Length: 334
Image (cartoon, rainbow, N blue to C red):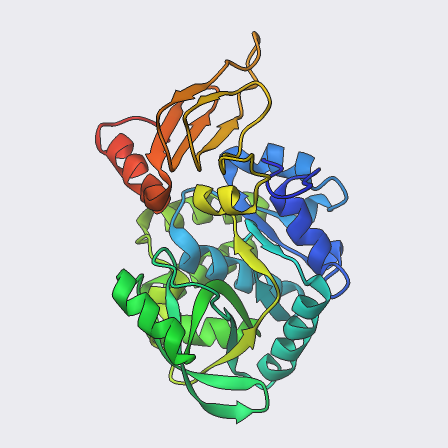
């Protein structure tokens, strides 16, 4: 769990939880994570009750995760409204963000699934986009379509048109609305969720065993592909809340404190004729952090951890997933 971003003193997931707790208190929240990360996640969120943590037995992307969590939340409260929020984002205007969430809940209460789109401030090729449709009410638009990560030329055109938003991956809905959408568009996932729910009535052990069996058989697909691109009417709230996605090392560089040459690095780093680089020294093993030295290079991200060293051009930071895929392909645990 990393404390990343300007002035960060606690992990991103804790900042996400605190940002929303005025609307969603800890005892009404679900924190979904992989089984191997439950321990460190609890350490990052010590004020959350044990019942808040949901351990996915196998990673199957966001459709399975959100569908399973929606069923559990509905079991606890059949009329529940849900905010599905990534844990690696920052908002400079947190009050404005909470106001937008409250507006999204108001719309979602009527059964419409809502997303929040971020007004772009640059032609970013690392994000997906949302094309705006007609107005539903003041400050709320229909989603015309989702657009995958574009080329530079397309991204420039999207920003210039004023009719596209960044897709921030935040969704708001009634628990039943999401389960209905899954039943219509992802019937295999719906069947799996129903199997888990039937097992839950037999007790915790049966529920755990069935959850493992169901997740192992599911395809890995995002909620965007599986549901949101297929829903007939989806609302979007355009938001300008100082949003940053810290799922990218490029964004960490953008937000970091830079030296005169544009480098973001700690005082131990050695930089000679080096410009616009990011150095993140995250080693925690005995023996401490190593000195990282860069000479005559520019626009790199260098991330040193206990078990791996990443060196990648900043403009290709989104391609870290290709490394993960390559490691899995050769049988390494990731």
